[in-house]
Length: 330
Ligand code: UT7
Image (tube, rainbow, N blue to C red; front, side):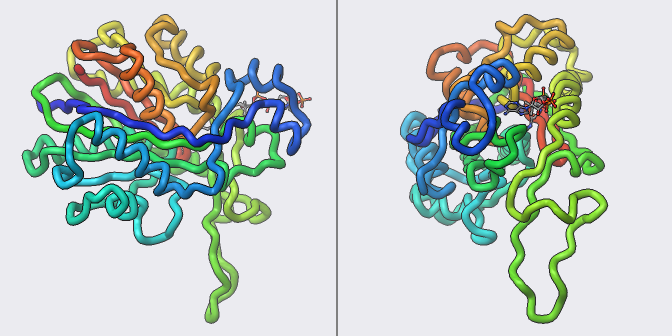
């Protein structure tokens, strides 16, 4: 069994704090509604800093804490749905900024499951012995694709980044990754295309995404995503446990995607687990897509809630519709 060791994490929380009351400037809402329906009070937003910048800041902190120089990084995987460039990848730009050049660097797009997908890819390379240290960076500026006139979605999202430096270990590790594209219509943002000299306007998957949906902003069917998420969280965790001889009760602490406190509470109930087993920081971070799990993990490691000698669960779910989980001994 080829496990992984998280040598260190780091994070970058942008300076702008947006309260629920601040959102009244854009939409008809109130703090009571948002807090009781989502668990969110404030979220962070960037004030012009690019995605690569916050990703690089998180990566630098993780490397410092791991006491590792950038030349020792064998691969950089960045997870983002809000990169600054179509190309190069955010990972390439972050590598340049932190001084980790030469090693492979690429982005993956798996929305809120991105960090778990990336960690699982890292584990495969580490297990093969081909690499020693992998840097996973999750960086998101959801504020750049949020529709601030849609009160049922703009209340959820925030910006942020976090990183993890991982190496191999001989401890327990098991994972699950999945995606069901038939649910793409419940959560999407159309890519922005320029006018083309030879063809008509861009064609999307028009029976899945509304022709009227604005380009470049998130469109969400909150109720459908909610239903999916409450099932995906337990399903991904149980799938990762399958065939391992371990049960959900063996998990000491779970760091789930921070989408909505009610999703986590419902999933906890369905799994028969107390809420104390779930690390939750949504109140002051909101939903930062792929950055949400590593930001929470960073807080959990710094506070000591996640420490050596535990069985840790990580679980993501989101657009795609994707879902993924890792169960690992720390
Ligand atoms: O990473 C995954 C990303 N997405 C998610 O996790 C989203 C999952 N879904 C959710 O979290 C919930 O569906 C929401 C928080 C988005 C919405 O909560 P809900 O309980 O499903 O509310 P709703 O959309 O059914 O709206 C209930 C009422 C409606 O009023 P009426 O029709 O009952 O009079 C809405 O118009 O609440 C109203 N409403 C609001 N009121 C004040 C909707 N948004 C707001 C708002 N402020 N921001």
